[in-house]
Image 1 (cartoon, one colour):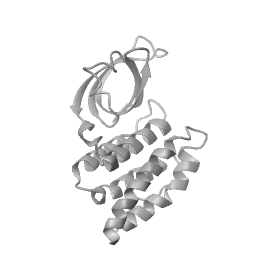
Image 2 (image 1 turned 90 degrees about the horizontal axis):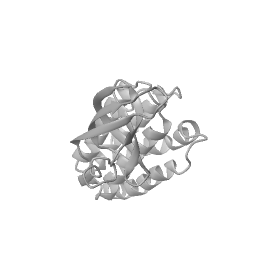
Image 3 (image 1 turned 120 degrees about the vertical axis):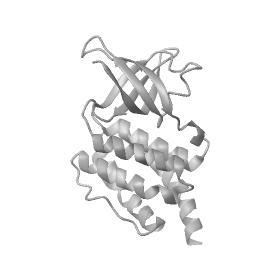
Image 4 (image 1 turned 180 degrees about the vertical axis):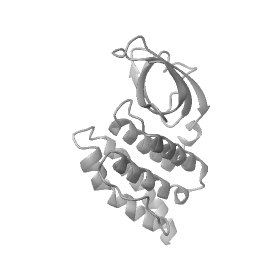
Length: 204
């Protein structure tokens, strides 16, 4: 498999002393896993951050071998990792996607939606500017993987979007994450706790 394409970096797991195994979402090839030599080194550490948009150059000798990849940074989410709410949202969206998508199945709509949500998280002044988009992404993820989800939701305000976010907890837990990594939902729980503070500010 040889591929050069923009990709959203979803996860990075340490491998050996300096390398990582990364999962990345592309628009037309779906999610791919690859070995990144030096991924934990000084040069690549700022690149191998979940949520980052990268240019991926993927090479493999056979279909049975984990590909090797070289990455170039296109857009960094690093500056927002110091913001607790934004960091929690980026972590949840990328961890969920990395966990539930099958490899090498194309989901162009999910790629575009996730990219838009991450851009909104990093561009909006508060969660009121991106929560509705995140809920729409979760709904689309359920629909694309065959668990209903319905049409894209429309929310009248932040409290309405938050209520919809709460309603999606069980479908995501029971369908998308059934028999998978239990600790993934802890990322959503942390995000919900931080969103509650914003909701309190809206109501007060």
